[in-house]
Length: 258
Image 1 (tube, one colour):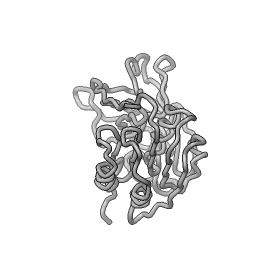
Image 2: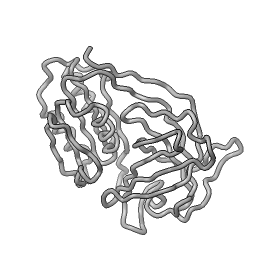
Image 3: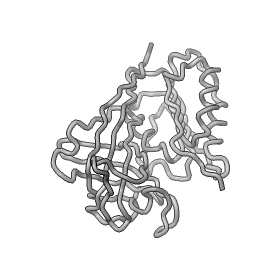
Image 4: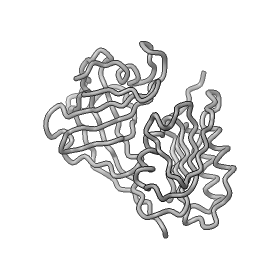
């Protein structure tokens, strides 16, 4: 096999962090630098896979504390975010957060907090629960993502290196370069227009239009977006002869009914 995809479980972990810096990458996309609330909070933290993610619980957008139960487990809703960068020795963790809604009226579990919480505000991070690690050199790479999965795409591009060939399909209104996405020269890049009524539909159609691989064992597929992407892409993998365990296909979010 030209590449392997191995899944590793990690023990549960709850880490207390604070917001140290906020950088606007593009309208509605911010990078948060989280630092240890106390030395050692990130001890043992690892995130070797391109799509490794953590669950984040925050307080109020005004900087309130995170509510905890008697065992120190955070209460309230959490949001899953891809690990962009981290350094255990320096004690920081970077997350790129997609923020919906107008300024001052942000939507979602942590949108307002990510956009305007004061520096120093507390957050609790849980995970990663595990990692999917790609090793080797796929002969053909297919990376398909909407805005929610762009941080993972950026990590995969960095891990795979400049020599890869294949297809990069992005359903986004953002300029990928503004988010640090630098496609390898051997990638065919397609920027697809999102449809609010049919999220990830453009990704599914673009994937279905790709030719079947000459050698299914050579093609690595990462396809992540709205939940509706999962079933048709898994069916497509079957037609291509690719075992779903040798691909990464996930719904990063679910569209709510109007």
